[in-house]
Amino acid sequence: MNNALDQKCDLLIRNCSEIHRKYFLNDKLLALMAGLIFTSEDKEADTQRLKECKKILEKNTGLLSNLRANPELVILSKMALSDDPEKYIKNVSEVYKKIHKGTKLENSYMALSAVLICDLGRQDEADDLIAKADQIRTLMDKAHPVLTSTEDTSFIMFLALTDKSADTIVKDIEEAYDYLKNTCKVKASSDAVQGISEVLAISYGDTKDKCDKVVRLFNTFTDRKAKFGNGSDFIVLGSLINVNTDTDTLVNEVLEAEVRLKDLKGFKDDEMDRQRRMMYASMLVAETYGMQSAVIGNSIISNALTTVISKQIASAISIAVNIASSAIPAACKKDEEDENKPS
Image (cartoon, rainbow, N blue to C red; front, side, top):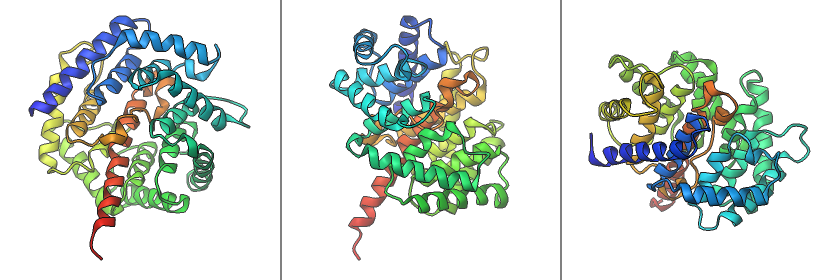
């Protein structure tokens, strides 16, 4: 295991242990989520600052606010990492109100979408982003009404944050979905295939090339007797597509990280299955290759935010978080490279 990856694993372990020690009444998976947020910033978890941020959160939100419901520990972690926690939560609250305006039911996905917009410093564009996200959702509903649900809310917001038009985004998703499902015949659920197709649509580049890399990774893990599942953990492979190294090296590093995590509290066999550990290991590997960039510093919360709603998918938040972390910065870098190319 390379030194950077070993250090990243150690930091995650310390952060998760410290947060769980202070927030033992919270779900362990939420403590893990918070640990990942601090780790993505290469910061030690500061539980005293989390305590201070909780007071700020309570002062600026109502008792029944979704910002204080399931995602609270995630939001507190984001506040703790910000320079001005009070300004941060005020911005998030304002954007959240805009997102759920006119809807009958509020939910945690909306709250986390507000966090996402503010993490990327786009709160002044909130109205336009929300309108674009609504357009994307309408188009996706037409294409896959059964597969598109509330759980896609944060992923759709990530898509809206790209410079691609709504039509282009949905076209890219459809192309990836059809290629993976019908040409590659990848052994994953329809929900998982749609999820990773959304991840791939965030970044630029040839859709089939990106899909082929996903399939190579999936098959290589399978050949190594370390098969990824066909659900939410399959989606995390999208976090590795922009890593500029060969497939065998990537797979080896993920498996080394998985072994490194296995004997530690929260990651042991009686607490977490191997596929879930491989999912977290994949995200750590992606980060060691610099996939988080400046944009990522604030974005460890996106996509399959399904997490906070159901324990079975409680890892979804972290998936999205890291996937988006790698995808959007890579996309931005690709744009800059294209602009700088001589014509």
